Amino acid sequence: MIHGGDTFKNRKAFFEMLKKEEVTLEKRVNWSKEYFEKELKNNFEIIRPRMPLADDAHYEEWKIYFEKYLLLLRNEVILLGYSLGGIFLVKYLSENIFPKKILATYLVAAPFDDSFANKDKMGRFVLKSDLSLLEKNSPNLNFFFSEGDDLVPASHIEKYRRKLPHSKIFIYKNKNGHFNVSKFPEIIKMIKSNLK
Image: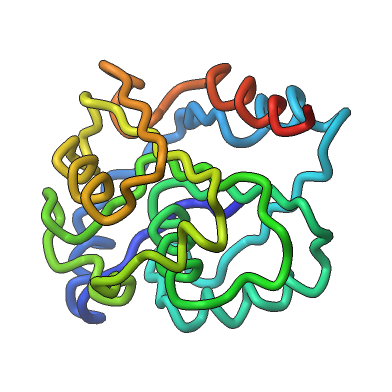
C-alpha cells in the first residue's frame, strides 16, 4: 500500500505551502490505517512502505525506495495506491515490467496530471502518453473517484478511461472530499474477492 503525499515544482513553492498550511490537533479520519488493518490482517500480509519525503515527494526517490520492497514481495501481490501513491503506481507500472504476478491494483483518488486546484504540483510524477504497460502488468486495474473530491477533480476519471480502456472505474457521489472517511467497505470487499 503506497500512501499519498505532496509534490511541488520547486523549493520556493514548497516553503510557501509550509508557511500557509494550517495545523490542527484533531485526529485525521483515515480508512487506510487501523480500519484497513483490522479488516484484512487475517487474510493478507499488509506492507506499508513509508515513502521518502512525502511532503515534498520526488518520483525518482520513491522509485528507488519502492524497488527495495520488490525483492520482498511474493507472487500474487495486490497493490493499492492512494492519491500521490496512486499516480506513483500508475507511473511506475506504465514504465517498468513488474517482476511479480499482480492479482489486482487499486488506485484511490489518483490524480492524472496537475489540472486541479494546486497546479504545477505533479511535475515530478508526470505520466508518459502510453500507459499500456500498466494494463499488461496488472490486468485487474481499478480506479476509485469521488465526485465530491476537493483535491482530485472528477475530470481525471475520463483521462484515465481514455488511456486505460480495460480498467474498471468506480465513482462515488461523495466520500467526504478526498476519501476522508473512517471506513471504505467497498474496497475491502473487492480486495477480499481476490482470494477466490
